Length: 485
Ligand code: BG6
Image (cartoon, rainbow, N blue to C red; front, side):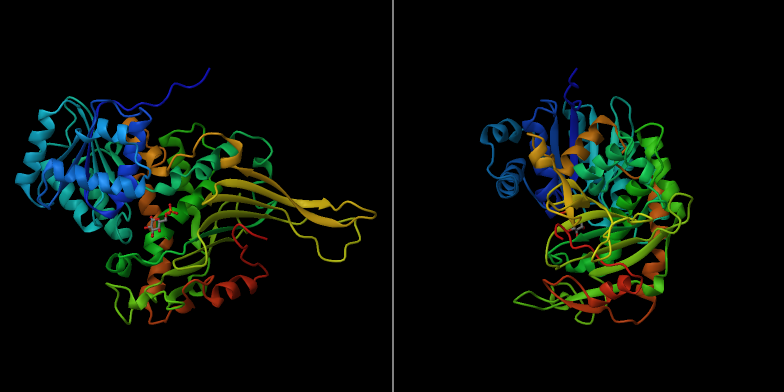
């Protein structure tokens, strides 16, 4: 029997930072899509809260323009049926009267359930939580109240712990949704299905058969107007502590008894507590320089012209547990690189004995999980080339979501926002999980920030610093080229 479509109960979706970039690029298009699909209750509301003096009408005009840019072509009928349900409340993040106004307006509307979303700079999170609690908006008298906190959650293990402490003073853990949109990408979710709904992969999913694992997340975008944020975040806080480590956990975790928030997060925490940076002193940090009309990092607005911040990193992690001991997990990520790609590669070992007389060493099998942009899975193995005698060739079993299913792949934010409204926290991070993730990256941050090492420079548009290649070559491995070879 087909599963009933997922539908959210009547909810007021309050966005702090509604006129910002995240709201325009991700949150509004996702809410709009959910509305078009009928997943939002017809009485649901979108409420913006911010410092700018805007009327409801002015906000609607701005959001319409944002949607026309980011969800083109705009479905006018769907917009017409949503626009009157968009409202604005003016107030500062540290302004008690503003939160009181918000509480009053929320009380005057129908939806009993509330989501509060911090699409604001991280330094505002504590004030927002305090303001909401001060106005009693954390209470769950008539309906539920949920808080979504964007990444980065803290900027080191101490500040993450402090932020957890602060938020948990007012909200219960079950009310808190710490977001990492990578977890909701289809292939990331499919990784659990591939591993735990099939019997052919799990037996080879360990140090017995896997030689090493690689995760690459690269993008051609630079810091795109976020120079001052990036100066304090850098690649380690922006994507390693969260997206990349979450992908490691999905690859490495033990099969949970149930696919629910408690069981999945328990398993991920076990991975993070066994995960170490193999040799932090060998990690490679890079920074992009000007090339072909593209600015170098140090020329970007908001960036210190002598900045040593890393816009690229390549590191080797190791998992000290029974399943993965001895299997390097090589991770790399960077901005202003040649292409946009996020891929996980499981490189298998070569067979113990090859009975054929081959002109070149046998190449090992490889499973590639493509997360971005062309979501899919490729199993690359050796096959016989047609003809006399035994000559080998590489063959692909190639699965693409786009080709195999005649339905669109939802954007990660669509999945996540609906999950929040449905109370499913499986794809969100728990307090202990975020802290455990910070513990893994701390030695890297200490190395980067505690020394006066210059980053390795790489030209914008290239594939990153040479040192990243040397890192693996020294150990007889090499980086797989994304979506190629
Ligand atoms: C965000 C980072 O979390 O992820 C950005 O802050 C990065 O720097 C982005 O560009 C990448 O996400 P996606 O979904 O485009 O791969």
